[in-house]
Length: 509
Ligand SMILES: *[C@@H]1O[C@H](CO)[C@@H](O)[C@H](O)[C@H]1NC(C)=O
Ligand SMILES: *[C@@H]1O[C@H](CO)[C@@H](O)[C@H](O)[C@H]1NC(C)=O
Ligand SMILES: *[C@@H]1O[C@H](CO)[C@@H](O)[C@H](O)[C@H]1NC(C)=O
Image (spheres, protein in one colour):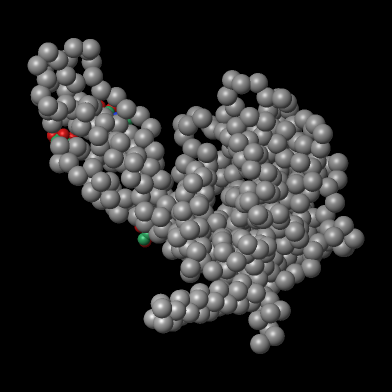
């Protein structure tokens, strides 16, 4: 009893100590949110959405700029976009500070000269092309630019004519108010992002590289502001993507077993081996990388803004990390953030009902976590399959290693420019680093800066995500106004020479 009693006491003491330490951590966990005032309609530099601005957005939606494939893009629509921009933004197109170039005929590159040439320029990018619409009927036609119940409907409203028009509108406003840029910057508008971007952003980046351009940071289209996506968090979360997942596709082929009549089969068949390999790959997910990539930063950014008991968990990831990882792996959308995903997408084999198939093949598509590489993923698959008779061949089309992860945090200039601008326009939003599952044009700019951010200032709910490339793509007029103001603040904040002052809590020390 004596020994047991002492042991119990020690355990109790240990647990009390642990909980105390964790509580202290929870209570003192620093907020990562930028400390800035919000932009309000009374401000002299608040941009109120005018009928004219709305009209510009509508016109942009009416111009069809569909990209079906890299050899099939509605190029006349792209040129119509050039004309629209010229007409809608006369100051941008007449200012002595701005040089406009058509790159590879269809892309646009604007060089905006700031007053202080000692500052490294930054770059804003977007794309003019849109994905096709399928046969299904939209509630509102996709190319009419119609406004219904406060929403502008149409292909391109959230992907990505919103950025094209928002950037231009903000710059026009700045020029009109005589508030000239201090830091130089580039605006790059591609025309084939939806079909890999090689002719558009690919050529813009080559032109810039030839001029030896280095960038302080780059902001492209990307993730949005989601409300209600995380249980236990009331505030909308502004996801600033600091990395993109990679992709690798494998063609798993089996032709090791001789074909023959099905009346005298051997113990194994090509199709049986293929099925076994595919089911092993599906049943054994790649390991969780939770804690090694930006998803940890995401949880920590949310942590200080959460309430008990979630706050207790998120501020103590050193202890609860495995539990959070396990919870995240339950839902496909959060599972995709923490690991390399595996999807079996095609399978084929056999020619006749009574002939052993000479060949079986299946396609496995992986989206690679930012901390892994194509090579690691392929090796892991080979280990899982563990059968020399099964061939894993890279399909190669669209394979891409994950992007480098851009830095984020208090002392990172580009991240703070973006974060502060979001906070000014969306004061309720929690700003957090994230990872894009899809790919953007940013791969062409990896060599020019390590600060690449992917973000669109669009407040939406989870179900709106289906509108990307889907039915009834739309943007509220409120979001359009916010978009213009966001880019305006990016331009204003980027004029600052240095990283902004730290948060109040760090100054107090
Ligand atoms: C996979 O490989 C097999 C064998 O070479 C080939 O017949 C099949 O077309 C390939 N699948 C794809 C989608 O390329
Ligand atoms: C694997 O693929 C290679 C090249 O396509 C082929 O020569 C070889 O026979 C295949 N091996 C097996 C075991 O299927
Ligand atoms: C970046 O630099 C590397 C090494 O010089 C080069 O191989 C690569 O093609 C460059 N990437 C781009 C997109 O220019």
